[in-house]
Length: 257
Length: 262
Image (cartoon, rainbow over all chains, first blue to last red; front, side):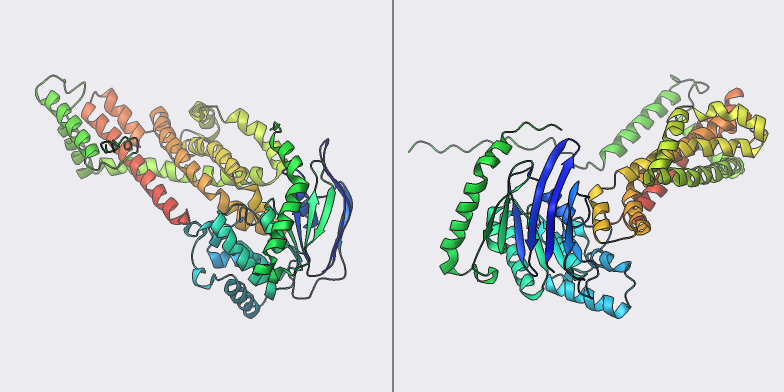
């Protein structure tokens, strides 16, 4: 679904976190939001999904979401946000239980989501029994089971170690080849942005403004090919050039907590 | 090449490891010393009877039915008092955990009344409810109520915010967020509160029975003291300790089954 962000501003008390964000996202497009810490990228994601009320501006979807989409704006969280007292299957089912679906449709959706994330054999396991990567797969399955129109990923791989992150990136690409949603992907990892996004939106430091929008012309599915390695390195270099100075400033800041 | 010297080991230690026999040895040695002191006449039996004498007293009390009579009388006060206090405490405490207005209304009152030793209210409760059972049950219920309120609302607070946000992001209605996220998430804190309130109930039943009762372990211990029957007195104290251990063991079993996911 095409998504429109118009003039979104957000203040936390006297502190301006986001300043006049205008962005249109095309149907089926993956947009990565990157920027130094404290640039308001997670705030923007919260506003898009309706978890935060913007101080000004609005976010809208063109047309009605597809009929089978139970929860048009669906998140995947950095900390997975799984219920530790529910099994894998019950965690995924949480997203369906209040929708009043028939048993057959529930079963079909659950089976599809668990299969897509490779969790079928782990349906009865509890989160504490799973590795970080498997836990995030549960988070992904829970998001897919509602067939979202817009998938909002809030640093989904940041809590994982480098090898697990690499594996999950491959999984996400495989899933995205089969599932058509519009995606907004917040990350501070430049490599994830370069590998997964059609466009990378670079935000500036507080108050967050759109500093640059970088389109990566090679289709996401083909980026793993050796002939595109140089392009990815170049994207990485350009992104780093855009945020390096501000990241350095942010890093040297004394936090008021 | 110079000589190869192995690196000396300097880790280890500072990690608690189970020592299963040690507690039993300590227990046996202490009781043995006590028994020896009593048998040799160092400890006068009126001051502190020997472990054997206490066991004998317990045995006799068990045989003639006095023990169960007093234990039953105490349990008939503890159980209803604890249930009433816990039910009311959970209702108020969970409301305070979930609704801001309930918290704003309840917190000052609870904070003001919580520190009062509830046994101080027994005389006024006797005035209202009479010297019989209701005043004792009410004292226990009051004593259980306040810690339960506090543990219930702090347990609600300890449910991670991000889980509630997750529920909202999936469009769960508020009632489902409470039933499926807040209540199960608060369960460990609520059950931990039960341990505190159970020990409060045991304390209050003894105190209340010492003030005005013919039966119950508290009354029995007091009478035994007045008659200088030290062995009976300590038998009553040992019974209280057993009762406390049984309650704690029962709550532990409930925790293990309800919180299996931990």
